[in-house]
Image 1 (tube, rainbow, N blue to C red):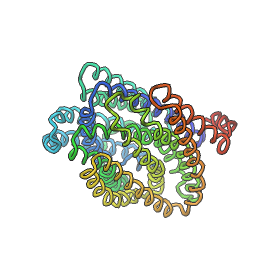
Image 2 (spheres, rainbow, N blue to C red):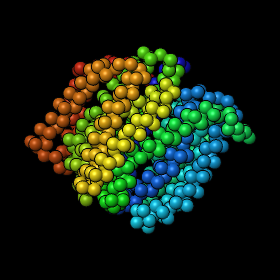
Image 3 (spheres, rainbow, N blue to C red):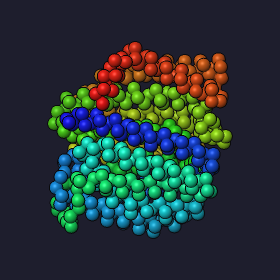
Image 4 (spheres, helix red, strand yellow):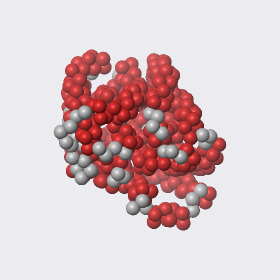
Length: 478
């Protein structure tokens, strides 16, 4: 099977896995919103922030370097494997030691037990991670997807069982940890044919990987601050209850985009790494990725914007109305995220992860003061608006970097972007008219809005972008 066919087949499996994972995640949040209160979500959000921060140090970017270098040397891979495990153990210890200071910073005693349990993530994840990297390098996305599906099902099941038994915020942390145990075990079993560790540890043999890792670490630290400074400051300035509202809005408007876009990029990176010497080929591939992402994501985001006041009470129940306006702001954040994501694949394909580091430095210098002032004077709404402004500026800088890597692309990009934007505006206008004439509350009106919006966008796409015959041909190709 050719690499292109493998990538297309891999895209199908990753799509299935991500769709199932996202559906389960939404179902879980919808149920938990009725069992937990905003402060419970806020405390778990802080716990996830801490684990995410230490995770940046533990993940040195070996996934990207292994794929970029097409690494297959068993001695090198063994060194990377044991190094990752040692760093993971160090992070486990550091989380334990830093817990009292984190509890004092947020003035939230519940964090102590949560962090002690969550820290076991670092003990578990690195047993299987290198096998995951190698399966991606060899385009074995079917195995990757199946493992992720099983892990997601187990995680959600454990979370809901614990939540119904009144374990409250602990249910989310324990469920996620059990799901990761299942994933790591599956990765080790499925990837053992690609790699069996040997007793070898030579730093000299992995210098090139470490060079990649240093930039990835720097980019990861800055990227973490850039993407999470809003939650960090809300938890500190406004408390965990407001952070709970903010987190739920973010999960509905931004989380799906951050889950769905990597489907394309995860499959595209190993493929693009094989054509990295041709700028023209990379440009065409980059534009196709942007085009595909815009047609897939824009209607979902536009639909969420216009139906937010119907969807929130229906899915989350009473008491979450404060999230509606935040969701509508985050919709535009997600739009810019969509257009920014492909740079990461392009930068690693060209072997220039340092560019991502510089981009994050510039973004943080703008974003941190904006968010601090927004949160201090205008609460969660001010933070969300500041996040939006900073994301827009980041996207513009992102495009400048892309142009330096592959040449002028912006005119073609804007031409491609015109149709999905126009289709979305027509869709939003049609749904808004329905709401004005017939109402928007309740499951019937919500379902009607979704059906009408989908029919309008789908009809316009079939008429002016992609014929049904082309869709069927693409399906048969998969």
